[in-house]
Length: 79
Figure 1 (cartoon, one colour):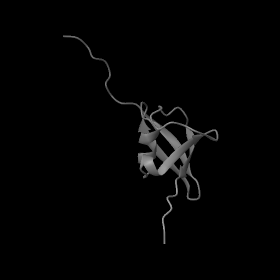
Figure 2 (cartoon, one colour; figure 1 turned 135 degrees about the vertical axis):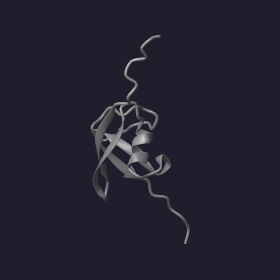
Figure 3 (cartoon, rainbow, N blue to C red; figure 1 turned 30 degrees about the vertical axis):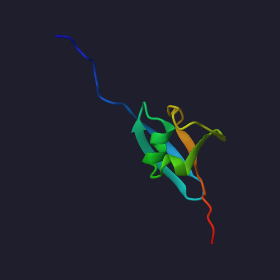
Figure 4 (cartoon, helix red, strand yellow; figure 1 turned 90 degrees about the horizontal axis):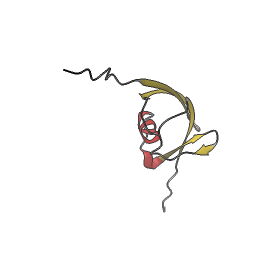
């Protein structure tokens, strides 16, 4: 028999500043992507973008910041 090691998932805390709405603290797995973080903040990745140090990051990139800004994308329509 062999040891598979510690399979517990490590977690990280990220402060998410939702522009115009305030800050919240989200906890995600340490291998989470920015799309996962957007979901943890209560949004769908198609309706928000994450900014790290003022620059947008791809949703499929792994979270590597402990503080981000989340910019909700506004969808227009006709009246």
